[in-house]
Image 1 (cartoon, rainbow, N blue to C red):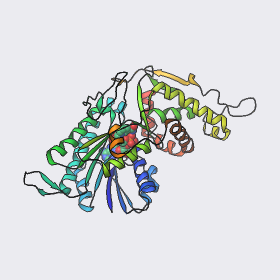
Image 2: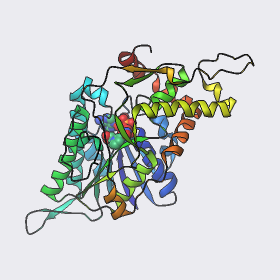
Image 3: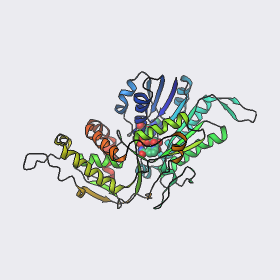
Amino acid sequence: MKTYLVTGAAGFIGANYIKYLLEKKYQNDDIKVIVLDLLTYAGNLGTIKNDIDDKRCVFVRGDIRDRDLVNGLFADNDIDYVVNFAAESHVDRSIEDPQLFLSVNILGTQNLLDAARKAWVTGKDETGYPTWKAGKRYHQVSTDEVYGSLGDTGYFMETTPLCPHSPYSASKASADMFVLAYHDTYHMPVSITRCSNNYGPYHFPEKLIPLIINNILEGKKLPVYGKGENVRDWLYVEDHCKAIDLVVREGRVGEVYNVGGHNEMKNIDIVKLVIKTIRELMDNDKNLRRVLKKQELDANGEIRTDWINEELITYVADRLGHDQRYGIDPTKIKNELGWYPETMFADGIVKTIEWNLANQEWIAEVTSGDYQKYYEEMYGNR
Ligand code: NAD
């Protein structure tokens, strides 16, 4: 029996992670998953409704910064693994409100570390270092953005010095340093994964890929920063979840593992690919056109798709401090743990678009309210 405390699991990756644990990897195993999530604009209980109906899963609405709440969770449960996804995660928002990112991403992480330390330390060894209950692990879900930006060549290794540029990545880098400091100072059993950009189901539509898909369905323009030349390394979200599961259970304590699929693409090429794929899917299956908000008919009485083309792209002022290129070297996790990305981008992007087409209710739910206000502030009514 293993008990997980998974924070931020009503968000994109955390939700995919608990679905992977409960529905796929440990479907018949005796595990307990406690989800702790504040349900900010990015967290949606509807995303994990089926999972929290599973009797092995418990949902707690709360803040990772809340000392009493987090200590209480450790007091009431024999938690084996903490997997910390909870974060403010959007770079643009961090430029608007850096302090929130500092507070949630750094202080929240440190609060979780401290609560786990209190619950898991059993005494001291002869050298004065704490001794720990067996089989425990604190895992921090981090990002390749902590390494900063690359030129045209080279990759981020685990040994690459941290050089974050945005308030978001600075807060994540700082949290990573705290995690490693708890290992060095207290010998706490910790691990970190630093992953490239994820895409897939339940991706909040402020991020590039779901933003483009949903703007097309809404008949809106497609905003692209600068010239769209920035390069990101994309990984299907379930491959990330598998990597985290492996590291939590089998990764070496005190280690960082880079996770990425060697799938680098320029933002503008991603946008063009999404346009082309949606158009092809709708041209092959006319029923799919029903989700288009723009319902203009052609001479044959069919819903038109000819307007789904690159003319929808509109270039907007570049993001401040925009990193040019991220590229991950995942050799360590491949060699040590046998992890490799199973979903090729060509398949993953089709699955992701199909998921978005089939889940318009979910999109409507998460884009109502707070996010709608935020979108209008950033992009107006485009
Ligand atoms: P997300 O924004 O979709 O979800 C974050 C979740 O955290 C939400 O459910 C939100 O309600 C919750 N949350 C926020 N503040 C909280 C608080 N104070 N207490 C409790 N819960 C809180 O984020 P995501 O894209 O799923 O990313 C999850 C983690 O993975 C983050 O730590 C992020 O830095 C990291 N990461 C993301 C990517 C990516 O491509 N999205 C890549 C690498 C690493």
